[in-house]
Amino acid sequence: MNFLETAVSIFIGSFLLTYLTIPKIIGVVEYRRLMDSPNHRSSHKSRTPTLGGVSFFYTLIFALFFIKGWTTLGEAMYIIPGLTILFIVGLKDDLVVISPGAKLMAQVLAIAFILANPSFTIHSLNGFLNINEIPFYLFLIIGGFMMLTIINSYNLIDGIDGLASVVGIVIMVIYTTIFYLTKEYFFALVSITMNACLMAFLGFNLSSDKKIFMGDTGSLIVGFIISILTLKFLALRPHVYTELPFLLENAPLIAISILIVPLFDTARVFAIRIANKKAPFSPDRNHTHHVLIDYWGLSHRQASFIIGCFNLLFVMLFIVLGSTAKNLGMVIMLVTVVVALGYIFFKYNYSFATLKQKIILRRQVNKIKAKVEDSNGKKRKTRTMDVEHRKEEKIE
Image (tube, rainbow, N blue to C red; front, side, top):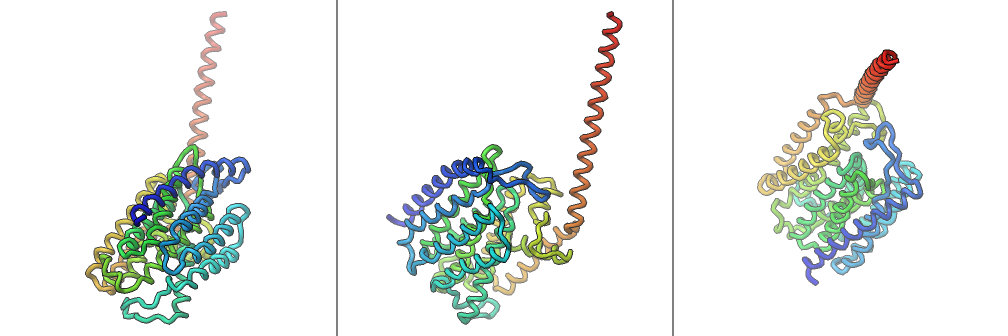
């Protein structure tokens, strides 16, 4: 079976396995009353089934079994332990909630399996900012930090219906293209598998009667796969970059552009929380998607679609620029865009205190309007009853 036949089979099989089993997961979650209850930060108003990420785990395990023959250094056997660790931790966090420290330790352990495989070792940045050879110990530090950042950044954007799935689909499409062009077929198939899972899940996530969230179980798994693909992209051998439409030295900037949505949102939110003297991981509604919904009046679908389109256009822009521009010019361009985006979102003063006050004020105004309408309705009803009562008295 050639690559294209395998790719089609893997996509169809992964999509159907996810699509057909999610309703079963919803049924079990509802029967066991494991739904996610809304709070003051939630974007949903009713109890909703979670654990959609469970379907990602077993679909990936099945897919890895069938595509393991496309590996060269046994990468599949190093991915499975990490996936299993994050699946268990994510499942426990969705059910009973665990401490950030325990979650971080699990992520470090999962990442260690990936860094131990020589296929993912980054030997050089190929002249990016005049950096060439990288010592192995420095690779372990940079690679581990990068994977931790990607996993947690993706986890943080899972705040509204469809956003994590749409951004994940965009990222997977890009990585599928990159690994197909560089003939790294195993990683192209992994991207296709994850893409099929996200596409099947998206329909349920946006549904009104069969809604389900991926939960930490899903976001940790997807973030882990994205971090693996990013690490492999940066570890590609120099000669394969001749197949890609951008310069070898611009690869790190292309990777950043692919992950611009989760990275920018995380950096922005952390900056706001620290400026307000709060812990970086303290919960609030300061995320970019919350701003689009709370202040610009967009629906979940509209906000997710806009952010997804921005991600795709941003990557395309940097690929075009990366085909001719040197990395210093690309860095200046990236910094300019990030500063511009930061200004657009910061100028409205989206601090937690301000945001909370405005939300409370809006809710109070809505309550007052509802009371006024209810009072007017009662007055009209009383007047109608009085008129009818007078008519009855006249008849008598």
